[in-house]
Amino acid sequence: MLFEILLIVITLIILAVSSYTDLKTREVPDILSYSLIFIALGLRILFSFILGKEIILSGLLGIFIGFLIAAAFYYSHQWGGADSKLLIAMGAVIGIPLALSIETLYFFIFLLSLLFIGAFYGLIWMGYLAIKNKDKFWKKYKLNIQDYGRMHIGLLIVTIFLIVIMFKVKTLLFLSIFPILLFYVFVFVSTIEQSFFTKWIPVGKLTEGDWLIKDVIVQGKTVMKKKTIELEDLTKLRKLYNEHKLTEIKIREGIPFIPSFLLAYIAFVIFVYFSNCLGF
Image (tube, rainbow, N blue to C red; front, side, top):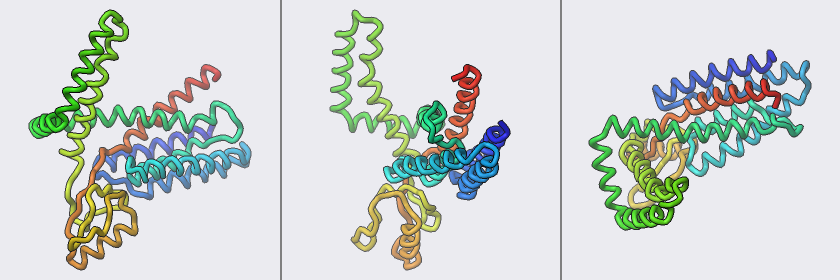
């Protein structure tokens, strides 16, 4: 019990600090993620003398699976470096026991909670930006609707057709609006990204994990394709900057996603507590 309490308290503190720095500076120092990994492993090693070596193996397996999932999100440009490193740390915290039980699924339950809460949190954040900058957003939104004019008309026709078909089945009537609803959500997210999440920044302010969304062209030659910027990319870009061949590049800046980790972990801890109380 002491092991679980210490791990939960330390994790909540580090996630809270990480969330604060992400909201304030849009960056999370690597020391926070690495500290969580080493603290979680340290506690597992310390308590292994009482609880057995299985808790060490559980943490190592959690790190390995967390690394694989984080790498998939990172290299598919869905997450930045800070998000990926923190997911690996959460693998060390939650662990994946080798013996099959409900606890074996805990890390994947946390991941599902993170994705669900993250999606909801992201929509709320985007909604806040749209309301705060309503004139700029609405102008761009209407232009994007016009750009997808044929698709818009086609989906309206499909929606009307589905409403006519399902009109007598009241319980399924709400499904008929899904095609046009998904279209409006797609345009909404696209508009937010174009209006608020893409910008030109000086090369000197680039950091590892930034998302390059426009090929870097120097003297008519493409020197770097759009990608997630890694450490070696920073070195190359800064060299071009020092040679006065490059001044700024275009990146996509995502929402401060780390608070989703905090919310998802709180939800996960509550889930585990009630699961144990109910004897699952």
